[in-house]
Image (cartoon, rainbow, N blue to C red; front, top):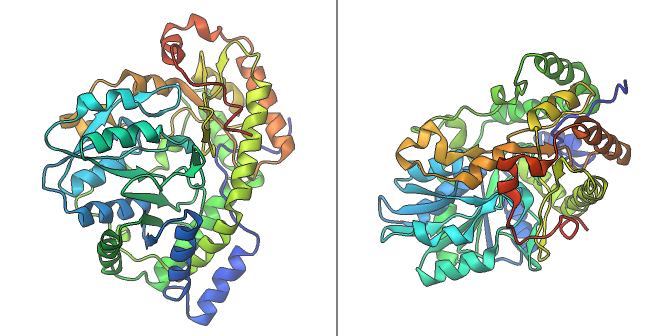
Length: 440
């Protein structure tokens, strides 16, 4: 067997990042310094926007936006049922009420056709999530928001650099927020950004962000060491010696996915953990500037990998490749396929040294955390049958070919997708086209 294993995740970094971090500590500019303001200016300029404000997390950037909007207590905020649990929980923590709307299972994004039925006299905002790097149908969402006088706050955590009809995501609504966590399109080992063209809103967000305490040098060192260890852990050599043997062993005992033990525990965020309430550091901003300069290059690589998968799997009857509308530019935070037996396929793949993922975000409308806000969202539930292939920028061309070969091997004898009624309903009747447009 090829000893080069392929992890499901890959961490973006720029050669020389470690030296820049060390140099910042030596100058006494690791915690505070000029790079934070510089990164904010460059980030806003990249998006042709006026204001960007750095925060400790993308979720905290969202929290500051909600606080700055000063919405009435109990106001309803519309979220896609399929999103990271922490985002609607942040809204609840801000004294607001999440309302979950179903997604289009072909695109994994908020279904505009389902929004109006969820609007009430208490609805104040819509939070479209550009999930897995694919932009939402923003024209229709903005039309609905204008019709009902609703504020749009874009969740761009997984989609920095993606475009809808030539326009970057994060530039449509009153505000948007981004994440710079380890696996995101811009990695600064944590952090986030709020963005807006509204000067007063930006000033209120900045006041909230800058009221937080600075990180200590010890916290910052721990952050970078932990992140670097994780980066090594998902490298081909690192994954070969820990993740691959553990995942392979677990694959013989039913549902093998061990990643649920790594992610942050789903729980009420009251009070916020201490590490949420911190300011973004200068050393992180230095990395952000370097990553922003490489963003289009990195995104271009993931699109190339995705296009290779889409072309190479086009004749597989047990697979449905991503559906990408022709007017969007997907950045493929995840490359999601539907297959007739995703768990069997993923178990077989890990035994061949390639790690697939079966679920990356949450069907929030069905989580115990949101029982009082529960809603029937069959489209979101159907996405649990999706399988995510490694597509990250650090993959070599030979890695991409190997993933493609393994996908064909582990799905070759599975039932044709059309024979699986649940999956057939998931992808039938959609108006989007095959994924080659978003991958060019």
